[in-house]
Image (tube, rainbow, N blue to C red; front, side):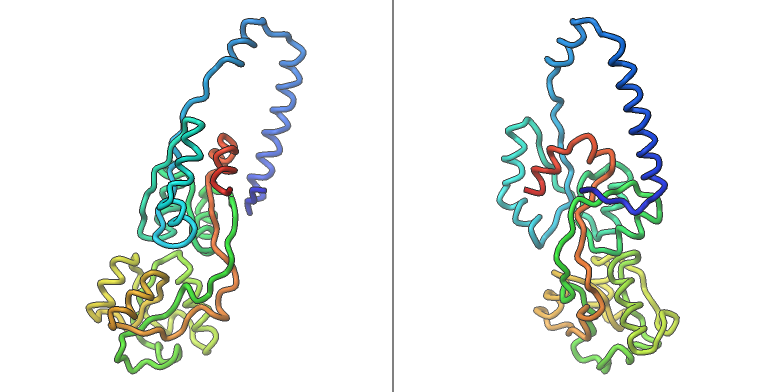
Length: 253
């Protein structure tokens, strides 16, 4: 079942469906020529190219590498293209601009997107992964706990799970966002800033966490355990969900 938090859209949908039912009733009372019925039954399905967010990790990465979705949709004349974005907020901007059909994000970006008016609906949720997001600091940093971040510069992606995590973590130790200096950067730029010691800490996710540790330039200060208990979401637009339910079904399977 597709879920939307917008009551206004629910009312609009109810009105639309009601008017649609009335139209169907009226049309049903007015018999159409037999030739029109034949034309509608013999019309061919227009091929669809499904634009899906590119992912380096998780189920989407496996599906993309194995080509299972492409094989499934090819039988129906449809195809798939994969599109890479810096983070969830950017992919949801593309969804809103009709440049993407299906995206995968953490829980926070979709809330920000809905607040901004993006007509998205949820396809599915995922299991929580609190260790998949973390505060990382330089390997030899004197920072030993979150409370030591007071007055420090912290890189993070705005409108992402990192923004939620920083507020929760600071609250846990009696601090507020105003007690630190957030530096809002997309992950690629934050990665450079962290590597060049231009920030004191970075709130990020996989695969950046593992890369920082493997390169020996940073260590985990605190992960999302106890701060994050909701999984991510696969989302689409309401229009795409209505027009292509068979593609959504194939995607989930």
